[in-house]
Image 1 (tube, helix red, strand yellow):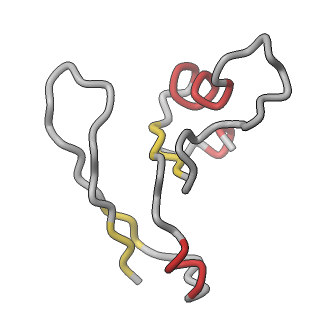
Image 2 (cartoon, rainbow, N blue to C red):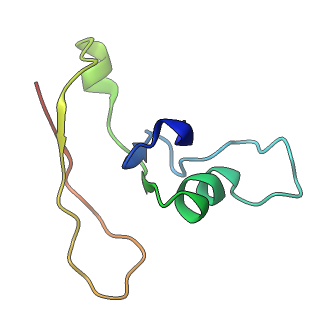
Amino acid sequence: MAEQDPMLVGADTPPVEVSPNPDPQVSLPVHQIMLVVNGIHLLENLKLDDLAAKRVHEFAFMMQPLKLQGFTGSSVAPIAVR
């Protein structure tokens, strides 16, 4: 997925991560590959069931993170516009 050069990767799971991790020697491999190595932002706990139920597969995605200096994450209010 990182080879497609996305700006952001999101999922409806608590961590956007492999669970259970098949390699116990590696901690948070998706975070390492996406965020650390490739600078791709991660968005967790998306509520995607309504979109899936309506079979919405394409939409404009908008979100505004909180502007907090020195933070590594924040709550957001993402919007899917069809």
